[in-house]
Amino acid sequence: MSYFAAALARTPRGWTARELDLDGASDVDELAERVRDLDDEAETALLLVEEDDEYVAIMRVDADADEPRVFVSDAHAADSYPVAELFADGVEELDTDEGDDDEDDTPGHDSEPLGDADLLADLGTSRRELIALVMHEGTLPADVISEVCERAGCLDALETLRGA
Image (cartoon, rainbow, N blue to C red; front, side, top):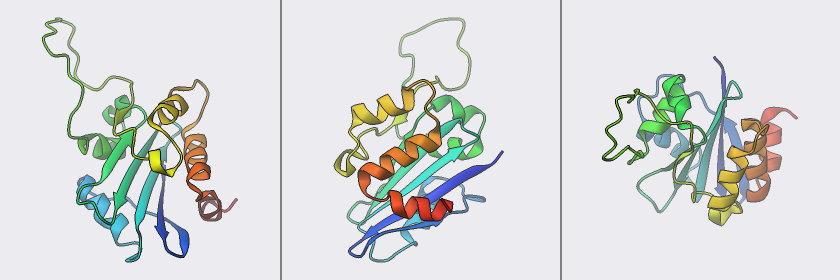
């Protein structure tokens, strides 16, 4: 299993990007600290992750906010991918089957987006647009990352990082 994790930081000088190693991270707070350490001048930083063309995970860390904001395109990926599980565990509230007494309760997550879909709204991708992007049949996680970066104005930094 291989993942691509791009950390992008918006500073007064513009966007900068670095590939981030997520190995050894124990939770979302630790990931957020790694993202915060990228640039002391960052107003906003994003961590964009895709793994094996299965899911995209997005974390947003703002200088004026204590808690990171997290979105995962496919909550079911948390059942198979440890990195996705880190992100899914960082979402405060999962949808549960309240009052549903089905005997067919299987452990794991539904194959639906999870988390704060509004996290990119002020960066050009509304909640509705983000959900539409990740739910569109045939759209790869890397395509979602490129699209949200283009809308946020950091596609050049991402492409430089990818070596495109």
